Amino acid sequence: MSKPASSNAALATRDLKHLWHPCTQMHDHESVPMVPIVRGEGAWLVDADGRRYLDGISSWWTNLFGHTNPRIAAALAEQARTLEHVIFAGFTHAPAIELAEELVRVTPPGLDRVFYADNGSAAIEVALKMSFHYWLNQGHGEKTRFIALSGSYHGETLGALSVSDVALYRKTYAPLLLTPFLAPSPDTYEGEPGESPEQTAKRRLAELRALLERHAHETCAVIVEPLVQCAGGMRMYHPSYLAGLRALCDEFAVHFIADEIAVGFGRTGSLFACEQADVTPDFMCLSKGLTGGFLPLSAVLTTTGVYEAFYAEYSAGKAFLHSHSYTGNPLACRVALETLAIFRDEPVLERNRQLATHLARRLEPLRDHPHVADVRQTGMIAAIELVADKASRRPFPADERRGLRVYLHGLQQGVLLRPLGNVVYFMPPYVVTEAEIDLLVDTAIAGIERAVTG
Image (cartoon, rainbow, N blue to C red; front, side, top):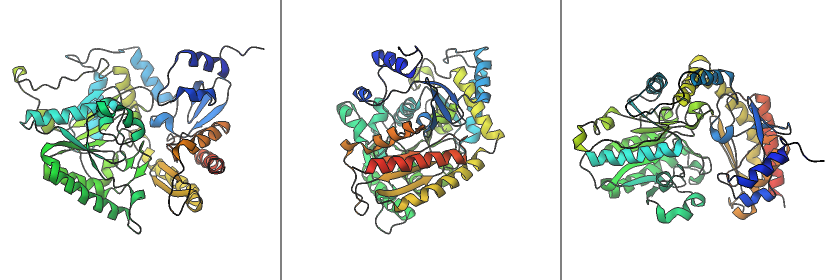
């Protein structure tokens, strides 16, 4: 008997006939199931056969307040009946204006200008180009380089990939990329024996200082993900590094670019990660949670000083000529406004702290697991480092794909986990309950047991 046209099997067959999926070796789908999702309900996704999956990774870290959130959906529908899009060069509209006003209000003080783009990688491109162009307009055309952290990841367009240091993504395209200076990451996991997270940060700041002493004259900016290097393996570090970074950027006259694409909007326990160090970067890149997971949108916030370096007569040739067809899209801006309104109207951060505490309590026993080298957490982001040998921290060979075993076990149990290599992590929507966190952790523990045996 043939499968219904809307079944998992039927949809997967149609998909694999034409589609090419991101971050995927498509050959894997000869054995790894393609999961067709037909609807979402809060923290859950539902496939074409009616199976439910708890979204433990917020659908690539985008979803904040649940799938098909009724409040955000209503705002989107209302905007769609009014204005869907208009060119953003020479034209404007209320959703874009109001969103810019709200972003300036809620971000660290001094970020007074907002430039819209379509996604996180595009936001990084904007910030890199804007930083370089600022220095060019100021008569410092010799500043053409950037400093990034070891293990960093900032996106997959060429500029964003240029300031990334994850070989899996970067190696193939290296001949096409800029070459950044790499500063050692303040990653606590890589700290010296007996060293506190703050001491690791201090030591790494000294190494960054040495790098700036040699290269500040040719450096536009230092770019970091504040507190958590997400796609680089959920590496976490002490907030004092950000305070020291701000001071060094001021001392050596280079910009500080904060990539808060993944860590912004409450993920780390504060609305923005930079708040935990009480610093204002020169550029703050936002996306993912900005629209609550509904639509593509990103924003780059910067200072009046940067803006004024471009403000001149047309004949001066100082304009920032960067554009996207859907810049400032009204639908996305309206959805983002509603997302920020939920933060304003509801005790989101307070509830997140309670959920984070529960998650930490549930993960604590894993610290003693013979194949777990580290359990780390920053707010609503938690990660488990799987290793072949705990004492030496020797990793499992990458080609054994232990994390894939965790993923497949999760699907069998109705839980979406998508480890980064051998790092099992949790980044659920904020509507998740303590009971659902229990399901996430219990499923991950069972999946880890399967992954580390044999």
